[in-house]
Length: 163
Image 1 (cartoon, rainbow, N blue to C red):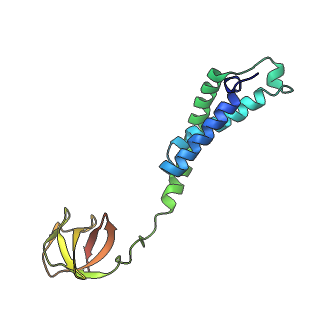
Image 2: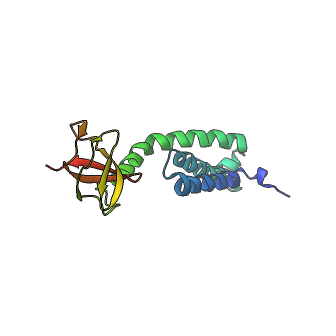
Image 3: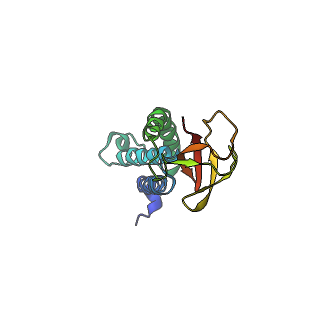
């Protein structure tokens, strides 16, 4: 009776699928993706190597878990070297104008001094935390300045002067 430890292809298949699930659903496309892909490639190689009619099996190579770890490491590094730039390009391709809040693009008038570190404005009957956008050339603006909301970050309005 064979146990799961006697089937390294199954171990690496399960590990690859678990790592892939963790990366996609929990982390969100991280370098763990390369390790998951390496484990899945290793599973396929070990399955083919263990095929009783296969060339590798006829040559007498019956890989175990230790050989699988070495194959997984090499496959993960090769996949990372080849896939790093396309993954970075994919992750950066979704950068578009932030439309996550209907406040973005509205004009407000400052009621207090606002700096890049923070401040407060009174708008629409509520006091809002606010700060200047990093792209703004000045370090502070006084009360009465017309500003545009360019981002809402952690319930703080990020502002830039109206041009």
